[in-house]
Image (cartoon, rainbow, N blue to C red; front, side, top):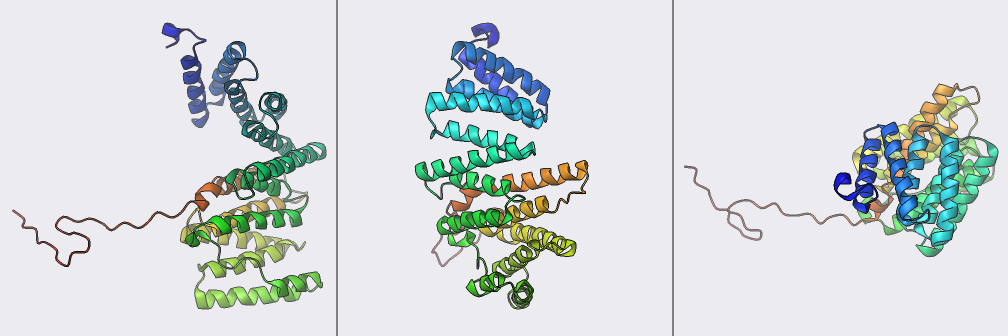
Amino acid sequence: MEAQFGAEHGDVTSSKFNLAALKAKMGSLEESEKIYRQVLEVRERTLGPQHSNTLRAKSNLAEILRRQERLEDAEQMLKNLVDQAHVSFGRDDPTTLKARCQLAHILAVQGDETRHRQAEAHLREVVSRREQKLGPSHPETLTALGRLAFLLECSNPREAEQLNEQIWQRLDSLAPAERRRGRSRAGGFLLGLAELGEPEREEALVRQVAERRSSTLGATHPDTLSARAELASILGRKELPEAQAESLALRREVANLSETCLGAEHVETLAAKAALAGAILRSLGPEANLADVKTARAEAEELHLKATARFKAAQTPMPSPTIPSFAGYAPGSSKIAVLAQG
């Protein structure tokens, strides 16, 4: 195509764009970066720096830089992208808001307090604008809300928990009955115990509820999983290492059982995965070495992304069951033909 049409032809750059994306999926990041830069250079020259196709190439290139851990380069490219998207499309445009989410991610993973505050400000505004433009339960709104909750897991775990609960309540309101949670958080009585400063009594009662549900309903029943998740939440608010360890183990168990027994797109499963991601982040103490921190953050990030990627699917109605068709049988018929074998 390049030989026939020339390097600046739109079909050529589109094909190169697709090739760069494929190289990235294969893990060939250096080759992908090289091709994306070629596409970006041509599109900036022929379409202009603020054209949507140019900005899309820049967005993908920034993601490649992030995966190569060239975070400062990615940050600078995304700041430029956000500024250009503001001018070209406005502050409420999906391209602008997506770029701001990308920038918030890059800022957050660099770890310093100033960038963390900047990431939080970006995400709060994205959530607000998406709620106004798309609605509070739109998958893209919930994804931004999830990113904000994930960001706050260590700096403000109480607000992170509240934001996550908002997400699950909104998903529950739209999901088909088969994908909704059983019982959500503990009722007012248990919350009242926590506020009155009786955490030990609260923990004992929730343990009792979880054990009784397990014995009467079964270990994989949604109500049992909800109770065990609530127990993990109570333990996670304690500072004792053994409580933190039990909380993390419970989170892993609930996440695995939920996915196996309820399905990957059940709201209970999504909540369990997000909670596990937060627990992994909070389990990193100040004495943790760099390699352990990197591994844990990568696991938490993967869990969080898997959960948010299924927000749309969780709201999709379940397909109607179909009656299998067999030779010689018509649905509704009282007779089945006998097939002779020759």
